Length: 313
Image 1: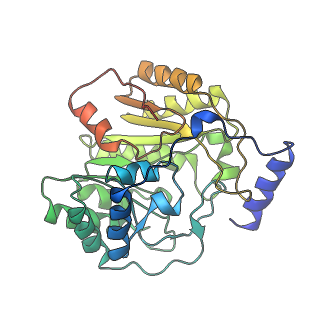
Image 2: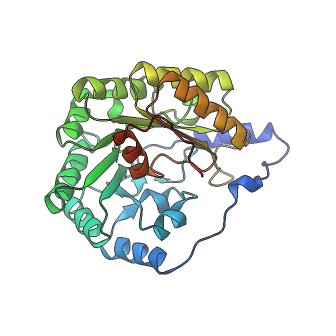
Image 3: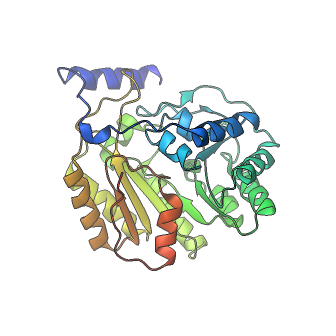
C-alpha cells in the first residue's frame, strides 16, 4: 500500500475507538488433512501462485480440503495498491512463457475439471496480461478438452481489445469483481474506476453473449444499503448473470478498517433483492468469495435452477 492509501486507512481508523471485534459467524474450524497438504505440495512443485494464499482468503483451507484452489498468474506482485488487498505491491517480473503449461500440468495432477484463474493487475504490460490469460485457457483445454475454466480478470484499464483477447480463448465464465460501490472507489481502489468495471461486463455480453458473466462485492467497507442496491442495479443493467456478496475482512492494521460486520440476515436480504432483479444466481453470505463454490454455481445455472439458494458460507 502506498503512502496515500496508508494515510486514508489510518484516517479512517482514527474515526473509530478500536478495530471491530470479529463476530462468531465469521469463525470456523480449521480443516486439516492429507488433501490440504497435497494441494500445497502440487502448487509448490510447479512453482505456481494462488490468490488463496497471496490474498489470505479465509476459505482457503476449506477449499484445499476439497481439492479446490484459484490459480493466480503473472506473479504475486501487483502494480496496484488497493487499500483492502493483502497482495504485495511493487515491480513485477516479466511474464513466464512456461506458466500456462505449468498450470495445466498442476490442474491435471489435481484432477481439476473446473479451474478458476485470476491474476494480479499488470498495468506495466502493453495488454495488461490478457495474452497470458488466453494462453493459460488454451493450455488447460489442450490437456483437458472437456474441462471448464473460469477467468477472474482485471479491468485492463478499460481496454476492449484486451478483453477480446481473453474472450477469444473461450473461457467458461468471465468474472470481474466491481469489489465496492462507486463512491468508495477513489478511497479504496483509486487506481481503478467503477465505470471501467461496469463497462467491461457490458462489453463482455456484447462480444460473447453466450459466456456467463459474474461479479462480486465486498461489504463492510463503509457503503450504505442504498449504494449496494444501486451497484446491483448497475450489474443487472449490463446483464451480469451471477453476483457474489461477502464480508470484507481486514488483512492487517495497515489496511482499510472494517466499517461494520454485516449480519447473515442482511446478506440474506441482499440475496432476495438480487433474485428479484433477475440475477441467474446470487451467492450472499459473510464468507462468500468470488470463486467460492464456482463450479456449483455454474452447475446450478446449467440446470436452470432459479431458486438461487444462499451459500452456506
